[in-house]
Image (cartoon, rainbow, N blue to C red):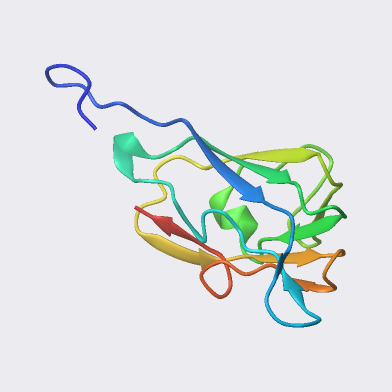
Length: 128
């Protein structure tokens, strides 16, 4: 998005929210990730961070099977296991620069519905 002559406005932080479950049948609820596909941009317009916020009413487990390809390594952790985010809490990941074209799936297990969250079946991350 242009921001004056010859400059580009970079959205440095992408927000991802896991809201409260919604009914999808008589006895079933689902959590739908907002947004279902995370667009982080590319090149100079690539986002720098992704901020995940949990409002499901229970814990979630966020797992990027190939997270080490996308993100700078978080302190005292790795990407082999899911990150647990309590209800009302959040977690921010810093993206590696210049990811180029990519499309990655990630998984979010929600305790409150005893199932994975849905986004773009499953949620995904896209560059650009």
